[in-house]
Length: 115
Image (cartoon, rainbow, N blue to C red; front, side, top):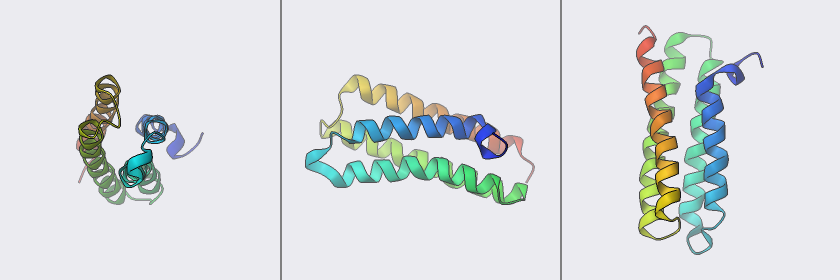
């Protein structure tokens, strides 16, 4: 690991993406929601990676803000998945906690960067 792969926030985003993809496999009657959840989770990791390779702190910060916004999108999708009974309450709580923790980590990382 030499680039974005060494970042803990990217590693967590990668793990989260895997968990979301596993959960969304069961959304047979709502493939659109499952697809949107997968896309949001993938976007989080991709924006962290892309931003870190842009070459400037300002660009990295901008991409982290986009990744954090994708966390919010994913949280919203999780509520819809729970409401529609695509995931049970326990899985919802676990995934929501993972997404929320990652969002807080990104907030701290963003705040630690100079503007």
